[in-house]
Image 1 (cartoon, rainbow, N blue to C red):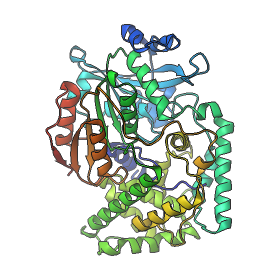
Image 2 (spheres, one colour):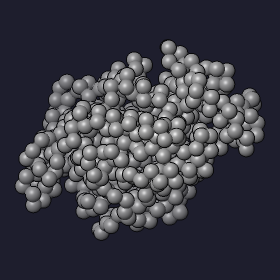
Image 3 (cartoon, helix red, strand yellow):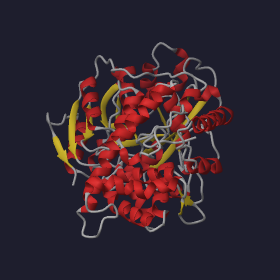
Image 4 (cartoon, helix red, strand yellow):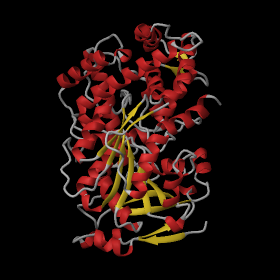
Amino acid sequence: MSFPVPRRTLRTPLGILSVLLAAVLAAACTTSTGGAAADAAAGSDPALKAFYGQTLSWGSCAQFASSADEEKSFTAPGLDCAALRVPLDYADPGGRTADIAVLRHKATDPSQRIGSLLVNPGGPGGSGISFAASLGTSAKTPVSVLARFDLVGFDPRGVGASTPAIDCLDDKQNDAERADDDTDPSPAGVAETEAENKQFVQGCISRTGVDVLANVGTRDVVKDMDVLRAVLGDQKLTYAGFSYGTRIGSTYAEAFPQNVRALVLDGALDPQQTTIDRTVDQNQGFQGAFDAFATWCAAQPTPCPLGQDPAKATTVWLALVRPLIDDPLPAGAGRTLGWNDAQTGISQALYVSAAYPILARGIADLARGNGTILLRLADLYYDRDAKGHYSNMLEAFTAISCVDEQQTTDRAQIDAQNRRVDEVAPFRSTGKGPVDALDPCAFWPVKPTSRPHVPKVDGLPPTVVVSVTGDPATPYQAGVDLAKALGGRLIKVVGDQHTASLQGNACVDDAVAKYLTDLTLPAEGLECRLT
């Protein structure tokens, strides 16, 4: 099975750079209850009243840590965790349940506390509890936001520490799938790739269960988020969503407009765009990011491994990377770097321009026959730790996408899509022609629970959308379109990275913080620049 890139839009640049630099260069319980808000929120469905009225038992976050790094970060002052119980299937609230992992960074000035600020980093498949812990302990998060809100992250159903968890592959199978490039466009190659995709789907069915796979979409996540809002005691939701998190935000707004206080949506997915068009636009965005990197690289005092002419950088890159299809390079610890991981590694670094120096080193090493840095960058994308263990982020990405996106079963459409991708993102072209194999979603055991459409929202308070002109993963125009669809205010950010809020840029963060705390909208036409 192949994992084409970009497959997902997960980490904000803050998260990418801090983890990337480290990887490459180197209880007492309290309770809270939703109270009256819970009764009102449950509405006319008495079967949901118990979920809306539950009490959370807050305590140590250690039980939710999936790695030594998380365990360390989860012990920071001001953090506590709990499990939120929700129906697995909201159509059957008396049936099986799921537990949603929740992490809270308590407001540093309780006397000025407004309520809870829920956050999501994207994906789909990204851990909200890890993201909230990072934001809560970062010096770049605005002081006013940390002072006046409990910062709350949750792992969406099926993701991370939430249970039941999505599970399709073991660690060895994940390694094997990454090493299998699936670049053969011949009928035999297509048949082999599709057979592998069917095996992947069967693994999801047997290890996770169809009942779970049928209920992991954004449609159900926003219902969980409304339960969480009420249980936290908030009459209205305050939320900041990044990348895929903007889909959660816009879907929540459509389902519960009367429960919205404030929404910040950064790195938007265009809600009405088809899956095929989104795939093409994302690849075009990454080609733009590659070109921006090549321009930066050529201007450095040291020789650029892609040459001094940015117009020829794609040709130089392909000359370096295409041989990996047949002859992977050594990459340390008995591992090798193939085509798929090389392309994934460069894409991981292109999310944020601050990673350009590391990427330049990785490409220079590649030219010298060493694939270690690019492989480590790919490991970050796939969330593989130093011991070879993977989180379930990739399986969750596929499972959620297959019920959120359109399931394409026509090979002619796949062929046309991949031909367009070759045209708009030549730095990713194998030179063999497109592979028109159907992806796992074509064989998924359940139908989508969502479809692309313009949100129809009445009574929604003003929202804020942030969009970066050179965002490689979520193109700028998608933010323009989402702001228009929601009737929200747009902050235009000039720069080359994926998302911009709560990351230390004074122009962006001052506007976002004032909106979150005081509901003061940014000035019409506000434009910020990244340095």
